[in-house]
Each structure stands twice: as C-alpha cells, then as structure tokens.
Amino acid sequence: MSIRKVIFVDDDPSMIRVLELAFSQAGFQTFRVMDSEAALTTIQQEVPDVVFMDVMMPGKDGYQLCREVREDTSLRQQPYIIMLTARGMSREQTLAKDAGANEFMTKPFSPAQLVNRVRQILE
Image (cartoon, rainbow, N blue to C red; front, side, top):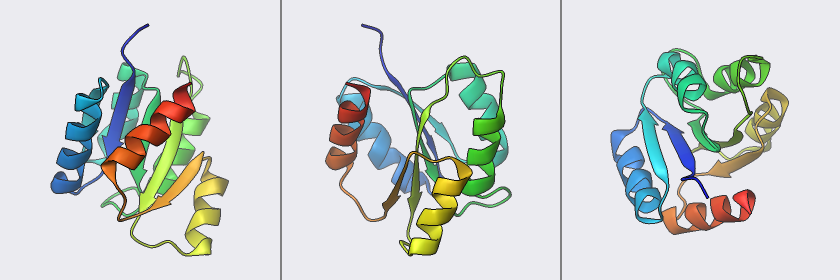
C-alpha cells in the first residue's frame, strides 16, 4: 500500500507543527502550506488523500480555496477536505458544506483524534 498524503493549509505555524508531528509519527507523508494562494498548486502537484484547510487565512479564505479545489478538473482525484476553524457556528458549517468540504471541525481538537478520523476515512 502506498504512503498516504495529507496536506495542512493553515497560516498558524504552531498548529501545523503539531499536526505534522502526529501524522508523520502515524506513517503519513505530510505537506504544509501556509499560504492559501499556493495551496491549489500544492494540491495539484501532490494529489493528497486528505486536505485540512483552515477557514480564516489571509488572502483567499478556506471556503474560496475549497471551491477552487472542487472545481479543478485537472485533479486526478479529489481529496477529502476537512475544514478547520476556531468559530464553530452553524453558519460556518453551512458555508463549508456549500463550498464542497467533506467535514467541518472546530478547534481545539486532539491531533490523535484527527489521525484516527483520517484512518477511518481512508479505510
């Protein structure tokens, strides 16, 4: 079985470090993108299994980026997209779903829980 790829799109370096460590230790290949403008290119190049996408980022927000990924016909496979946010209001959940996200999670969360969730998704 090939190594599963996970991309983290978040402008918070400490958040990405924690998640990268947890997923690397669990055997995933991880990529960090701290700029929403560069995220689509990284997703196209790496063809990840899962993308964690922060909602609030400078430039494009996570909703815009999610829509761009979903509309990109050049992707060989569409990744499973999990939107992450500090604001867990139902409006944000609706916006994430409308943008094409598969799931919506509110910070804070346990990195171990995220690893387990991704394993469930990929089974």
